[in-house]
Length: 455
Ligand SMILES: Nc1ncnc2c1ncn2[C@@H]1O[C@H](COP(=O)(O)OP(=O)(O)OP(=O)(O)O)[C@@H](O)[C@H]1O
Ligand SMILES: [Mg+2]
Image 1 (spheres, rainbow, N blue to C red):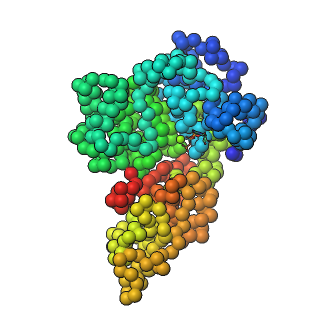
Image 2: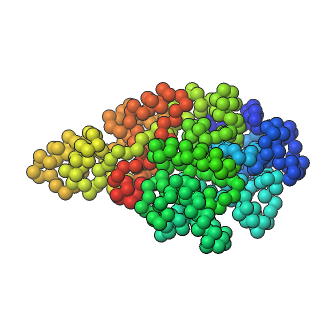
Image 3: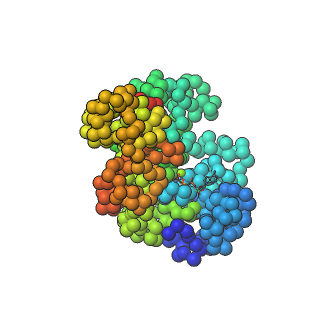
């Protein structure tokens, strides 16, 4: 199920162009979704984004029933294809789908951070795709808070308060007003008392709060969040989700929240749009999606029919309790293991790239061997580590796990250790439909922080 063709039944909450008014029939005052009786804050109409040369050619191909893969042969990457949706005022609208399905591209089309290849984006009924650069900036300023990303994007040499005030500063808001609003936003996200601290003094979760506060300080109606909590460890992540819900009850923004994690989507979303291969395949409340999945792809997502092909290593990995550093001596490494109740650890360098695996037993042997080095782990006694890419489907991880007798290191595109998979977690993930495990977890060990890597 990796391709989609025009022959597929059309998704039920995504009407074809012929059953709905064209964009020109959508006047600015018609910003109400009659069926729901709710005010439409943000809408996409037949929205497409193709990257690469000759994007129109790719759109033609898709219109004729071609697939995303066909378009790729022309050198075009289809980010979003023919998406129409209404996002209501005050709702938290979640975009969910696998990696590469087009979530971020769609999010960026909504404030025209990406220029659409075709289609319209309506903000309070106004088609922003027709605006000049200057008009667009004015609309962004008035209607959109900043975006909140997975990477914290906070400025290391500024205090918490100055980071929170940054968006206002860019807007030219005066110093007093800036300070007042920044203090307010800082308190909103629970960082009262931390105003004068620097980012390096904060935990990952707190840094993400700073990013959130910066967006909130701008105090516009629409908040766009792209995997904002995905880099946090599971406990903090859940805490942030709870806080966002609580916060939303107070500030009542229109939030578009991107995630690839089903639990997060179900928890946060008033409605959820599921994306697959650049299209939106279903829009509905969590309940609607759970009880009436539009197609087998959605079903696989929610029912665990084929969880092994939907989940990836990143979904089931756990934080790394502890690692040995290349420069650790055998005693240091063994003490770390003992403190964490481990019988073995992955060995990493300062960039958290994995170099091998070492067991308590081999360290013991090294310490007893008078000829072995004392100042570092003996490379001769290291075993090769088993590692897997974060995006590896669970199926592949299962294959590896059945052979490996040690935890599997999960690495990112840059080869850095982000988590570990233990056998039990795989079974748990397969056995628990509706539980997508830890989502995107990062290595949260003390060592990661000491080394200035990790968060
Ligand atoms: N700037 C770009 N240039 C070329 N292709 C792009 C660009 N941005 C996205 N794409 C392509 O568009 C498609 C959708 O990407 P997008 O980043 O929107 O996916 P996503 O659902 O956000 O994935 P992830 O969960 O990994 O963040 C992918 O095939 C991607 O390669
Ligand atoms: Mg993305």
